[in-house]
Image 1 (cartoon, rainbow, N blue to C red):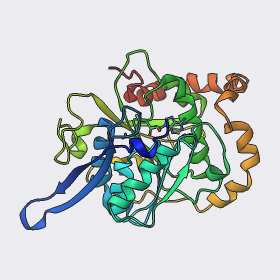
Image 2: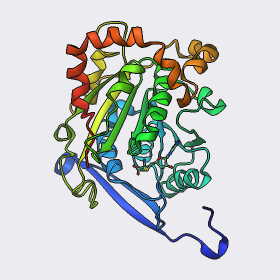
Image 3: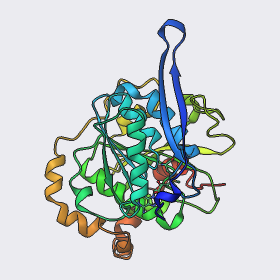
Image 4: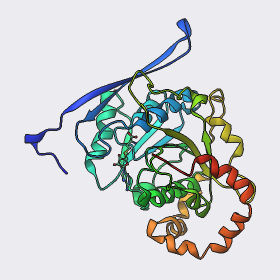
Length: 311
Ligand SMILES: C[S@@+](CC[C@H](N)C(=O)[O-])C[C@H]1O[C@@H](n2cnc3c(N)ncnc32)[C@H](O)[C@@H]1O
């Protein structure tokens, strides 16, 4: 819904102050996020965003000079924190909702971030803007698993990006809303691995983060999704530690071969191009069944996700 001039949205700025260390060695970062007082999704900072931003802050050293994409960014708190910590950030939201892209731009302006690109990326669609993204190190997604009907579209987009950027990681937080929700099957289908990151490892096991009232009483979980390698375990298993506090110096690493992958976009598009292509995936049942046989290892991995996402 577009706002006419007569109904200019009311904007309030919410300040988040991230801190680490004690006394003279204390590092702080203040971020101002303009929120639009409108019931539409994406117009304000969701509880998940405070947790993901805390994770970004805790791991800021490894993000310096890395290329980071945020999907479903809304008012973009995690992406803005990454940019202020020295990452090259691209913010994205649904290409079909320009108002959400406006939220991203407004958050950049409020924090003096002139160099942050904002692009429309709709989950599950392979658009020119998606294909033409630069090589990525980290993808951020806060509260993007909130509608089960969109789960596969999100996963399809992530699978596409991780295929192009095999050593990249998807850092994502979700709110436990329903015991019936699961992404386990989708992870198998799209050959992705997942590890849960305990909130206490990055000082996020609190109701009030960065001086805000978020995440409050909401139950938020954090996970890292990577590409599964052929056979044994998750892609870049060595990189999983990257996510933990204290492992900040590890490199997330960028595959040099990413550009080559762009040339294969045609093939990728067939496979990843749209969520509606899910039925085609049934043909891959053989391959998937093989994976299920590896259930021992995988269940340990996937079970951690809480592939039960509860309210
Ligand atoms: C629950 S909000 C979370 C916003 C923000 N990440 C946060 O945590 O504060 C979900 C976000 O996903 C975006 N979104 C919804 N459907 C989408 C789609 N199909 N493609 C891309 N983005 C979408 C919305 O515009 C919104 O910004």
